[in-house]
Image (cartoon, rainbow, N blue to C red):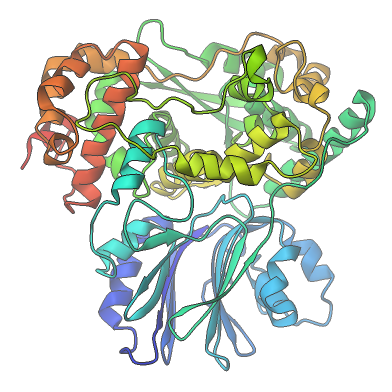
Length: 587
C-alpha cells in the first residue's frame, strides 16, 4: 500500500523538474511513511512512497526488470500463484508488486487480466518510452491523471497534482451540484477541471505526454441469472468467501478488521475466526448521542461468540468538532458521506496495533442489500422508483439556483448497467458498482485509512466472490422484502449470534443532532463562507442549521458544512486552523 505519482513530458516540453517531483512526494508522504523512491529517465519520472506490508526488507520501489520500471499502490493477492506459474522468471524480491512487472513484460497492456487484488500501477518501458497505467476493476485503489500542455501527470490523490502546481485550484460547477445533491461525483471527470479519474478496470497506454490507448476490464460478470438452487449456491458461496478472506489475509505485518455488528462484517469475522489460530483483533465505533444507532452491543455479541479480541471506540461530539477539519481535508476527491467520521477515528485507533484491516465494503452492492435496489427492481405501477431520483436540496429553498443536470451521471451509469439479460435488480446493483462504490464508499475507505497509514482490504470485492454472487437468481438475493438473502442464510448456518435475519438497523452518524445543538453558531459560520454564499442565500443557510435535526435538513446542512471545509482546504489552499469553529472563523 503506497502512494504513486509521475510525469510524462510532451516532446516539446522540458524534462520533469526535480522540485515538482519533490512536491508530489511530499503530498503523498502520508500514504507511505516507510520509505520513498523515484526514477527519472529522459522525459518520464516515477515517484513512490511506501507503506511496507509484504517483503518488508526487499520491497522498496521502483522495481526494475529488463527495460521496465514499476511503481505500485495496492496488493496483488494471487502473487504467490502467479510466481509459481512463471518458473522461468528470476524474481529479485518477494514483493507482490514485482509480479505485475513481469506479467507486463510477457503480456503487454493485457497483463492486468491475470491480477487478483486492489491496485494502481505505473510501468515505464524505457526503450519504447511508454508508461502503462492500470487500476483494479472495482476501483478499490485510486489513480488520477491530468493532461496539460507540458504532458501527462498522474498521482494516487488529486490533491498531489494541485500541491505540485500541475493543475490550478478550481471547481467544476456540474460536479459541485452532484456533490451537493447526492454526496459524491460520478464518471471520469472530477470536481477539479483538468483532473480525471482512471476509471475502475482501466489500463491506459501513455507516451509523448498523452494517452495513446484505452483498455478496460469489467468487474462484474455479464449475462442474466444462473440456474442454481439454494444448496448449491450456498456451497459455492462458502468456497468463494473462504478463499477470498484467506487471500486477503496475506501480510507480513499484523492485521485486524472493522466490525460494525451488521451482516457483512459479521461474515468476515466468522471466516477470519475460522482461518486464524489466534483471536482476531476487531474494532468497533459507537456514538455518545442519545438515541444514535449504536452497533457496539451487537458487535460485542458476535465478537464474544467468535472468540475475537474486541476493541470499542466511542466517537463523541467534542471529538468530531475538534477533528472535522482534518477529516474533511483528507477527502480531496470529495464525498460528503458522514461515515468518514467514524472511519477516520477507527483508522486512527487501529494504527496503534495493526497496519492492515479487513472491511465489509461491497457486501450490500454484491448481494443486493439496499432497499433502493428492491424499489428499482419493481415496475412503476407497483411502486417502483429510480435510485437517487430526488436530490438532497430538492424542495428546500436554500440554494440560489436549482441544480439542473445533477442526475446526468447517474442516468448514464444506469443506461450502461442495463446490459442484455440482466434483471432490474442486477442492473441497479451494477449502477452502484460503477459510481457509488468507487467514488463514495471506497474513496472514503482509502482516504480515511491512508491518512493514518493503514491499509484497508475488501474481501467482498473479489473476482471469485463476484462470480459466485452477482449472477444469482433474484430470489436468492431478495426474498420476503429481505435483501442479501443467501448471505444471511450462510451467516445463519455459521454464526447465529450475528442474528442474520434481524431487522436492518442502518448506519447513521448523529451529525444532525450535533449540528442542531450548535445550529446558531455553526450555521452563521457556514453561511459566511464565500463558497457557500456564492451558491446559497446566507439567511436560509443559517435557518437550515437551526433545524438540522430533521432528516432532510440534516443532510443538506451536513453537505454545506462539508463543502465549506473542503473548499477551504482544496480550493483556497488553507490548512485546518483548529477545531471546526476556529477553522471556519479564520479568514
